[in-house]
Image (cartoon, rainbow, N blue to C red):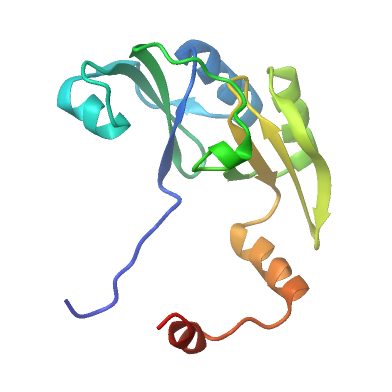
Length: 172
């Protein structure tokens, strides 16, 4: 295969929720989500494969949208799976990053809609960010800058990084 390959990571994410309607209302009220699909059932081989079992797994899903990107809300119906905050060292995905226009206002809406602050408003260079949870314990990072802007500041704090060629040599 020749030519440049590409991968986009900020297309969509799926999260587990205890109740589709409650989660939909939370994201609508706090972050301006819009409903893209009504709930639908996923079962059989697709549910088993996506979620890694068990046999007979079944869940309901609703897709919600933001100004850019989609979130899939997944409510397990068989087996029913409790939600809640899980210690970070037990997770494969630690948080979901969302860019918002005003972090303080978005955090206030999150708290009023049933979420909780995990890390309060924090300056990150010229940007503001915070970490909070939705009612099901999913950790969200809210920032008023793009990830590219946040990375520029992070790299500046770390000093120079090795070039791609040097990193490749180090891993051989």
